[in-house]
Length: 114
Image (cartoon, rainbow, N blue to C red; front, side, top):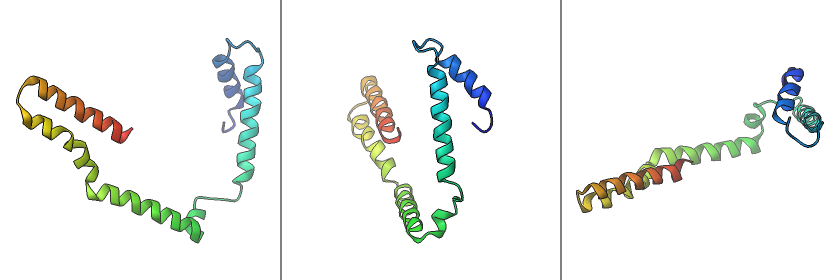
């Protein structure tokens, strides 16, 4: 909440004004405040540099970066997206096949990225 406690209270009250329990928003505010305090206490003294200075964490970061770099570098995802499209597009030149090609390509893009 970064010191904006009163603003948080007003927003929670506005979001939950139709709830049966009139103090539901106050309970939620207290729960959020307690969670933020617990997280602040847990992460006190730690920084992002920890993942680069601890050998175990550095290994995990290196594996994740290598995996993502290899996926981006080999272009397999692009081929997989368009391999669905090309066989249908080359079977005929009717409007129906073109529409089907566009729909399949967009569906493939949606599945791959979201």
